[in-house]
Image (cartoon, rainbow, N blue to C red; front, side, top):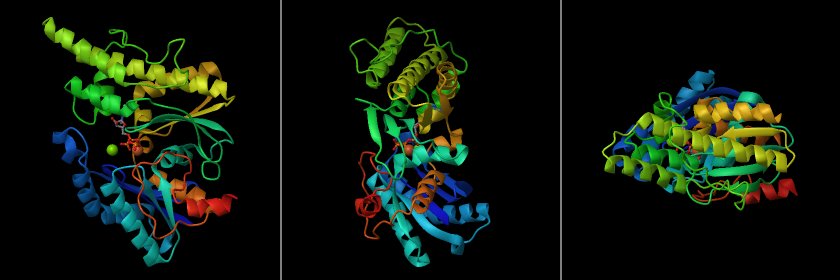
Length: 352
Ligand code: ATP
Ligand code: MG
Ligand code: FE
């Protein structure tokens, strides 16, 4: 079965086509440039951009895969979490495609998509893995068995900002463009990661060993910048960017490896936009090698939002025999990741 995946939870319109774990083709359109002058994603602008980009993206993905709509055997769509107005565009379109083609529809959790992205690069996940999701809105350590058949277990979440949010806010403080993650990654290349000793949040003896917090780190960067200005010193942007990035990569990898040890898991999967970060990837590789843990990180273009990852979840659902979602389903703008499929009436009987 060829699964058509549709993603419109934020500012990327993503479409992907997957069959039996293989990515056949995809297309991506971003409204990022339209949000730059606002310093963040404007939901109405994002939604309008999805309306104009979605059908062309479906065509482009089909062309890319050398397929036609008649080849599509199932449709999967992100139903949450995300911006409500943006989600509605994808869900509305997915219902229309499923109805017109007479194929089943699957409502997918966006974060399950991020995790499934890795299966397109490295094949099926092992029976147990620790998944570190580091994205614009989430930072979580998860214990994953079967991504679509078993509930996901949250080992920890951030108590305040997400890692990607911290990158975006620190970039703003440093006068770097939005989105901040890629800008800091670039700026840091010319910097010294040991130049500024930024704190490693929640790594004290009495802190939750797997907990994350990034707002204090962001404040530490802001203080550093303020004191440089007050003293009339020129700000070494590259050094600050590299030092901040090092603090994030250090904390993330340390805790992720600890989670693997605590739960006796030998595979770590790092996904989400921040998994595209060059230092996070390098440090994870180094520390997993030292710890004897298998590391899986998708290529950068599958780390940030895309439609292929949603098609990948749809493909897993189809192959596990999941029941399709109700065509009356709606969006769920804020919902924790427990089940990959978002329509509970669909998975409960199947899993019973
Ligand atoms: P969520 O998935 O939590 O709903 P989102 O979909 O907006 O949020 P993603 O698309 O997964 O998030 O990731 C976007 C985030 O990743 C942004 O915060 C961006 O700054 C960050 N990011 C992207 N590339 C990099 C990079 N090279 N280094 C660090 N951060 C990055
Ligand atoms: Mg985005
Ligand atoms: Fe995302």
